[in-house]
Image (cartoon, rainbow, N blue to C red; front, top):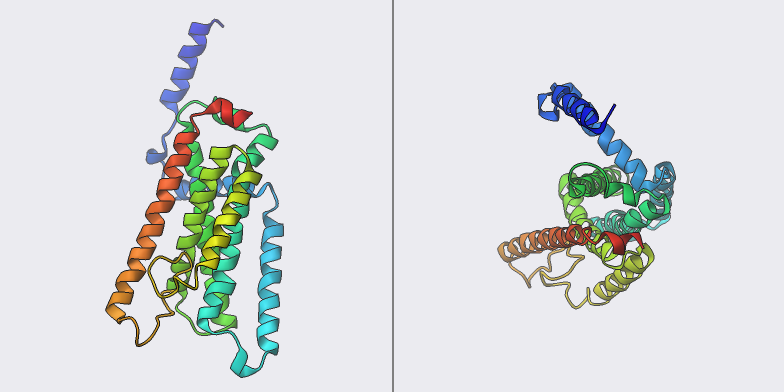
Length: 262
């Protein structure tokens, strides 16, 4: 078989292949689930069960510590928002995104993404999208745990507002991982920036500029409820747009093949 025959055969295979839009709904759901599952395995390097185990241990520790505390000293909804939801999600966002490029380089699969037919941007968008979907599921799961085991809280609201900073940090770390082509450097720079944001959080607590902005912790008698609601959505939409901008910049940086493969 010569080169011309091979090209004709590949064209015939592609012509007879069923596209995703032509699949039945059940088949589409199965394909999406398989793609999500496989990308999750790649991101976690087949250690997803260990991550879930560590998260479960952390939740059990908080529950025991809260249960053994005096009833007047137990965690409030605002404390749960930061300790139970935001802290694990931010930790996962930093660790997983700093390894997003590094794990591909260690497994010698990064170069394959540059040789696959089609747009490599789509590959990384699917991978990053799977990771963001996983964060959203974890946010909802942690919100459910907070509702059933700690204190009455708005499940969907807590999940969404805890997820948005994790999305921003994911985009930030992903950008630095591509920029430096080094996961450790990306993690260190992101950790320093998070530390600075934490230091200045107290000064920014009553403003819309805080990364750790808590919509449910309105300073009474100082901010009008309508103004606070505007600040909430300005903060959330701002973080989403900044996160998307970092993702866009990271994907543009993926064009520098030689730098990433060094």
